[in-house]
Amino acid sequence: MHEDVDEIFTELMKEIRKLEKSRRISVEHEELLKKAVGWLKDHQHPEGYWGYESVADTCLVLLALSMYEIRKNEEWLIKGKYPGGIKRSVEWLKKTQNIDNWENNLWDTSICLQALYRLGVQDEWVIKSAEWVRNKCEREPKKFPVHHLAQALNVLNLAGYDECAKKITEIVISKVEERIENKKGDEYLYDPYVTGQILDALVRSGVPVTHKVLRACENDLRRFLEEKKVKGISEGAFQDVTMALLGLASFLGGGDDELVNAVVAEIFKSPERYKKDGCWYHDAKKTAFALLGLSRIKEVRKIDEFPYKIYTLIARYHEKIRDCIAELEKTYEKRIKRGYLLLTLIYILLMASVFAIIEYGVESPISQLLLGSLIIPVLFQISPYFKKYILPYLKRGGKK
Image (cartoon, rainbow, N blue to C red; front, side, top):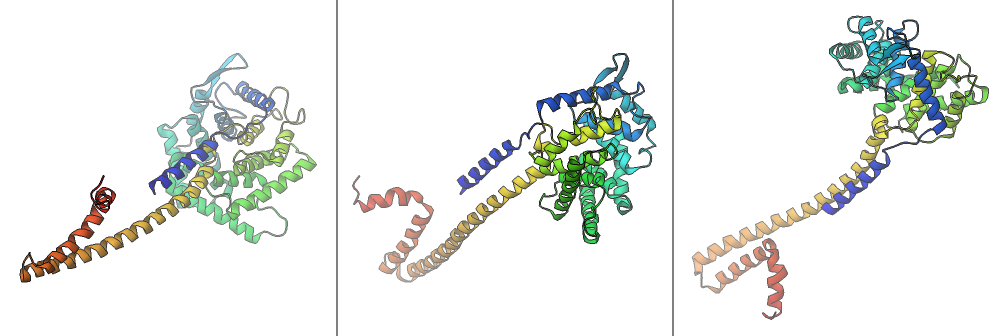
């Protein structure tokens, strides 16, 4: 039976290796993404922020850069002149922190923390803000918009607050289920900007893709993106499109999809959206949103980025192992029952033998018969060598 378990685990390891990498977007697009990362570096303010001293813009850019292998010690020259780098942004965020959060806003703080954790910054002031997020989620979670909770959920998972993450996952699912029940006709559950964040967070928290809430979110995002594919993507709808792409691509686990491919082509359409210098709409925030959405379909380790894949795989093999163990239990249950029966028989024969020896003496034929009856089953059961070697030898009449 142990050979069956070994075989199941061998199959599991083969399946895990298949999850190692997802597909790549085109080489041409990879080069455009690198150019976009370079554009963001060149448009950092020397003090470390992006935009108009905006915490949200700065953290979105940092989170986007963290998706493209930028880490906390990386430095660069802004437009080849001024010192720039991640450390300057981290220091700026530390200075603008409001005791233990940013802007007293759950969404802003959650985006900041995701960026910092992914960049490898986990100092005491960062952990303090993560605790602020956890406390908000534990004390008054239902008062926050659902996409704020979705981003908080990403933080709770990164920070290792598993119990709170489980609670928030259930609340987010409950909120979406309520919308599913109450929505009228063809109206969307939420703005696609919100739904994309919800779907992304739930997928990354390990909720199975078969869950009705995830399927409802997927359907909404597909319908929205189909409309945009036909009508075109306006600048006003660009953030909605990128967040819808983020959610749908997460749901698909990095896999190929005709609609996603069409939307990606539209996002890179130049010069309407993607500019020659490597940005989208000459705007750091929109460029960050584009990079975040596209990050879900570039080359990634599925095991890292899409945990539900590994959870689903293990669950499937768990069934096989459970069946194997159940069969093993049945086999040993039969053996144990036979063992109890044998012990009972031996005990009866032993008592009868003792009684016969006392009553008739050891030389008595009755005593000899009972002693023989006692010894033979013991030899058969506890000595496999007796069955394998001695018994065949006796059957051959002592001949080799």
